[in-house]
Length: 256
Image (cartoon, rainbow, N blue to C red; front, side, top):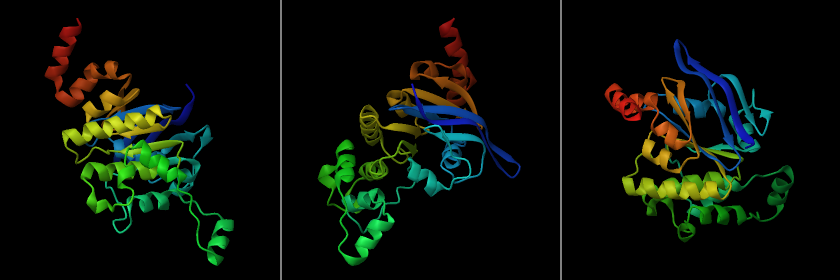
């Protein structure tokens, strides 16, 4: 499978703290790849690094192009989009307007036209993004009218409306109850099945294991396991990281 996003030996240091050490992973075309780990494992730091928000060593490529030295907005324009743990919607705009702001990419010519006439904004990408997350009914509502889970989906749809090559989702299930988390997972899987390449970062192991094609596991800034969900679920190092050494010992006995 062709890699759309690839990282090689990505490391991040904050002063004397080594936050990430040599993290390498790939997201293939149309893949939903999970990055999990206990709290403080370095998941968000990894997303911050590859999207250009923190300095890092190592190599990050998008469609084979080295992103070294590029600013976050330059990476976003190339197609590396992200969501944030905080939803950060425009509460005074409708859901449709929130998506339109993200999808509108002005050029010099379009800016000149808008200076002398009323702006004409295409809604095709917005309509497609709302349909993918099944929120067409909420297009004219404001974010305050929606539940927390629905607001998270608006954030996902807003990023999707940008037509990114890869969408990095930073803990989208944070703050959701079990039902909302399951619904979010179902719609993310629908996005992947529609051909969207995504990197899902979350500490909810159950969510990630249930919807992802491939999973990478971080602990203390280092990769400790990778592979398909069934293999990762039963990896003793992963069980130890999440449940402790006793659980890992029981798993080892079961497999013997």
